[in-house]
Image 1 (tube, rainbow, N blue to C red):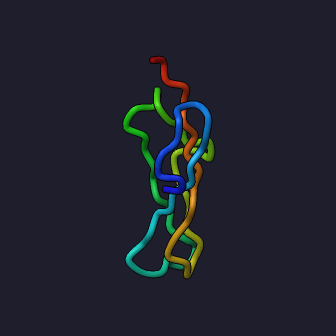
Image 2: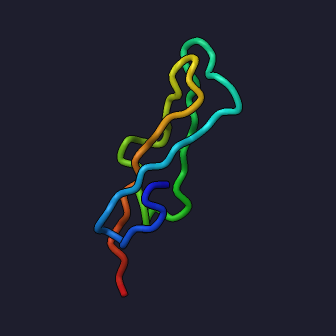
Length: 68
């Protein structure tokens, strides 16, 4: 993730999912999940598609405000 640390509710982070090899023709869909959706969300949806012949895709993670 980049950045690897964010202040809740004030920033987003990008993350990358990697395959062990190239994605097949038509690409590869990877399902994403957030363990605690009160802390973060996936604005692009719950999956990311790695294009054919590529081995990675980047997606956005939004932080949520945290009460202190």
